[in-house]
Image (cartoon, rainbow, N blue to C red; front, top):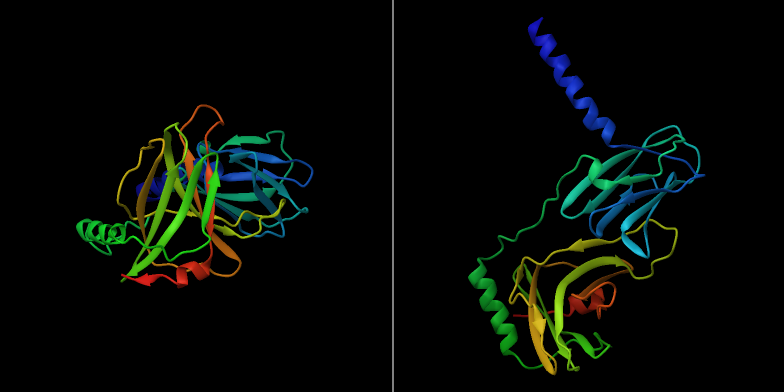
Length: 266
């Protein structure tokens, strides 16, 4: 009897967790999830029942609607700020249409931390790349607001893929680096479609760039587990400037699968 009571109490204690991870939607209302940071992954279980997309103007907000009435449940998975949120979606009218993502249960997102090589080996490989002066990747550069972002070289050493970037500041105003972001997404993104992008994180970075002074050029190397990009997808590199409001000089560069397949052996 005591054992049965413990089981019942444990079952009851799990109910709030399960209920917290349920969301109701209809085709007549748009439901919004406000996330604490930029969304790095978003996917619905059944795209014929649920439409989920990032709001273009607000990359930390998800818009959700049902495409039609349905009886069975669907699902929605979001990765944001290093956390994975798995929600069950059902069809039901509700007065509440805006939710904070943190109000749902989540778990820490697993991240590949490498283990492919010790850090001192990765550092040595990066230094080998930086010791080379030539550039074998062509037509992968962007000039904007006096800043040039260029993919200079791609090398492969065992399971390590090394990408060398060159950042030039042609202005007199220092460029304060807010961060680099690496995304794999569809080459052509259409509105009102499920977002098919996810963020990849380098396992090693040679320098932790904070500022690029005016009139200077700096090279940096990032290390990833070896990868290829399937189908009509691209690797998108973002360089973000730390600035007040929305005034940063942000750049975005696209890399194709053929560029990675042409990686040189290091």
